[in-house]
Length: 454
Image (cartoon, rainbow, N blue to C red; front, side, top):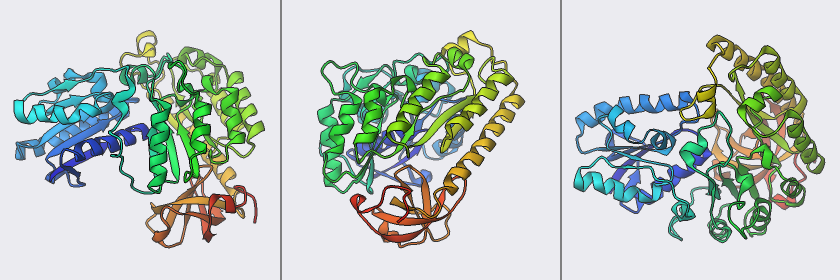
């Protein structure tokens, strides 16, 4: 048995890709290790959506140089978005790097590694494929760890957002066949999975490029009918594709969790136009209003970019106003950084000073902490269904889980409850999580609706 050290950068899609990498290489006799010094194969699965994430990759590669010098036989590779973006240039920049594989080439990783071992090549594989079979693992090989699982349903994006590198590193939209997705979810349910997260760069547009395929709303309905699955989540959604049918399933499907991540990026119409998002502030708010009319308790999260080229004080102020108006439960906020190949990097000067960007980011995050704390405190006294995920990151002897609205709950209880749905009475709150006490083990159908007092 050989050792594989696998480091993941970035989002949930990358986490899923890393799980695939581990499975693919596991069939080649590699076991994942946490000790990089003992690894025979070191792979970095990378993200380049923002400059900071990309720089972390180069820092990690720099630290690996010493390991390569000490152990000549170790193989070092880079996959994911930075690999797709840079390709052969990575080999020139990092002489101790052995291989590069892009976002569509995980299935080819065994033969890429073999080229390094037998031919002493430094291979680069960054081709895009239109046949969705590149996303498939051999049936029956999916491993399950825990009660939650990711399932990729599509990759790529056909949008032309001016700041976004995703179409350049993930390609155009490609959807997996629905029958294969449903077969995979059924297999996961048979192995004890109770919650699935459906993944894609723009899940809302699932199936649109495949004649005769299910719509995303129809796919959710089919997943909802699978016995054993108790919770369904998905990410990421583009507001432009939040259709009436998709809004309706939030009211109709009992297993679809009442949480939606809907990236708005800015509250200013001027900035949204320069970003080429394809909607106005009013369009976005209309979709939120219609969603809340059908599922009033739905929790919302979003992405915010501050300091986009040309952003004025008034345009930034419109974003603060939007945060207050919508009342998000959680946000992911970033300062703008130009990305290679994107329209904004070519058309606009990065003209907002760094200190202004940092100040705006701080103001956004401070306001959101107030909003999140207020909304979390409203949950105190209620009963919440949580899916226990294991030990709390607080490292204080507690366990943690998530509500159907994706709020973290920390509470005291036996770690043996990991993977179980339990009822928790909410006794306290912070801006980032809830505090609870164990009530009883339940099934989803036994519990009061989320947030309703017992």
